[in-house]
Length: 538
Image (tube, rainbow, N blue to C red):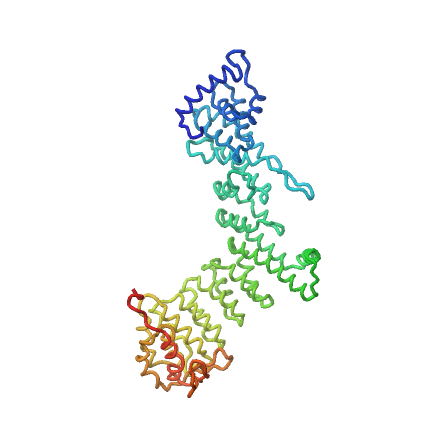
């Protein structure tokens, strides 16, 4: 019936009205009148929806009864799992004249608002939550707002009153009402329809006990205005501070002990301490995930301070830096200074990696000189991370600039891993042919420059290119020296001289010259890589 057009409905309704008058109530015969009792009774009868629709659209009934018929259609229990009454009500309102519709709506909306303002049901101890009778009214309001047939609520003031009531309704019991499956339209759908005002009250709900922190953060990030986001940011910082506090420990300690007892676990004191630390990590990571979505100055400042704290575990510091993704302010010099301070420390590799990732999100012109300053460090892993960040934001035209920043002279402390990593990254540069920009460094420049340039072939050279490297096999330029740790040492594994099975019998060869680097390291890698066939290349 909801699919009938307006003319078809009026024709059908005319016949139905005659039937009602002649038989159903006997309006024309006995003079009886349809009252509230009839309207309420029809909520549960087989043909009740049709009769309630008739009352709602038929001009002979007074406004109060028509409004009551609309309310009956809203609160009518689902039929075959669907609340058919709401759709009938909205279609009926859309089918009557605008003047009459607005008279009815002017009384109907306050009735809906009254139902929305009723306190949410409270579950008794150890009992399931009672059904929430307010959902049909929320669904009806949303359906009226979003009708694609006509504007159901034309009065702007009335519309705003209903939106305000819906916002209050959502905030009143957010966690229970968010995903309730009995509603026809999800609450999140409603909040997105209303927009920024709908989430302005959510920061107050972001407390240490909130179970829907992630969903609230998502809604605020996508819908909230700047004021709401900053308020949420401050709330998230307060939660993170609580997670790291002694108060959290006092509360979670007995909870964890009870959980262990229920599972018949008897951890040692050391094991329990590890359990508690993991429990804290999980809580902290959840808060960081929400911070990542919301951002805001309070979160950025907290995360930078947390990541810089060497007393925190590398896992936590890494998570803090990951939460800063896309959140550093390019117009705030202090943000750049603080993230570079973290990147320039002797932090664990996973922390350095995240720090340089955040630096790499900033404009090249803001950070490249600062990154080049880091090249002066004697810690090759930090220099490698800084160089990798520079190359990710560079093109072929920057090759000379980059090569000019590598260590000079004998390049003491320059690791072989650097030469190979830089060569690979240089080969990925866009806007030109990297090999053309590297050619001059194959035979000239410092040992760091030569090995970096030749390192290009280690990643991109094939067996077909080996002959072209023959001139460099005799280069007697001293290779860099790095003895700080095994990973930085200049040495490569080669087949053992006189071995019967070269594939199995291998030995390490020290790389003392650039020629050694070509023969022992670069060419063996090239020989194992076959050139692409023409059809594969295509």
